[in-house]
Length: 415
Image (cartoon, rainbow, N blue to C red; front, side):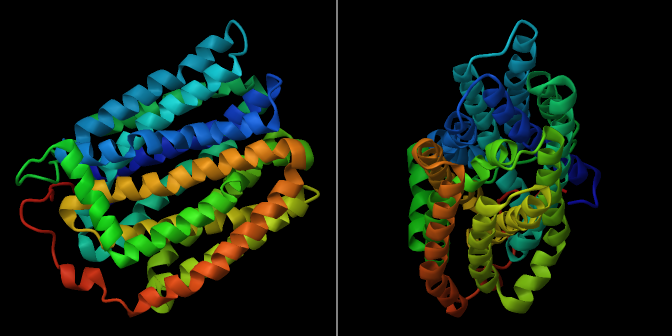
């Protein structure tokens, strides 16, 4: 994919979308807190961007397998850009209400759901079923570039022009992503061409495959439980660093950027490490390591301490994402890539939204630091209980080894 012009454009669009996420990840919670919102309301910003996966995840997966990936990505990025432009324009006359901020976060997240759905099928057609982990690694590297630059840019802009105007960078990044997709010359064909089925039947087929395939089912259950236990650690990170650690916007952005940079550095190692140690072992270790880093965040008392635990936390979160998506997608047949990918992500992000909302609600009675320590304990419990189930997957046959090339009739034209 990176070797061709159109492949590079696809990766650039994903990097720009990730840049937009990174900018908003700093600016939106800061905007809520600056408008007098509580820590819980600031944490709900993250939940609002995730809830669209619960609402639209399944139909987006079916649409991704039945429609042109290029058209779907183009429409999604353009819609994101329009929604993201509302807050900078509103800021000209005043600070938008918290309800408007949450509604726009939901709308932008909705556009991201459909863009992701189209991307699953595109990546699968590029790398083939035997290299899903490597393909996810390349895509994650593109995300890493954006998620490294986004928080750093967001921190600088929040400090320089304020959080409302800083979000103009989010709108610009989404618009640039749409232009990258528009510039792709090669037609990106839809994945499903035989026996068109209705949306409900298509959705059901993807869900049944996830439930029946032992590896996908196991990873989904364990990661959902882990997300429910500890997702608030990411959603509440900006309020924690801002108000409890006492860091200015630039240093908050620097920690988030350094975490994503470490994730970008480790991404090329995922494939070799998976072949050497096995993805199951890496996932089990990352779950436990993430829980320990979460506890460190709850105890951090300054910039150096926050860096020492925040950067490894973000790196392990990214590592888990690469590994779990790679393992899930390589176990799915080519004609179900979008549906399995979107349904799996919908399940996990639904747990993320619920966990983040629960943690946000508990910040009032318990306080941020206590919530972080509670999330760390719950996450470690999930890691210890889930590890034996994950490690047993090593005895299953490798689906990529038996799948061979993608079936005839599936999308294969993406460079």
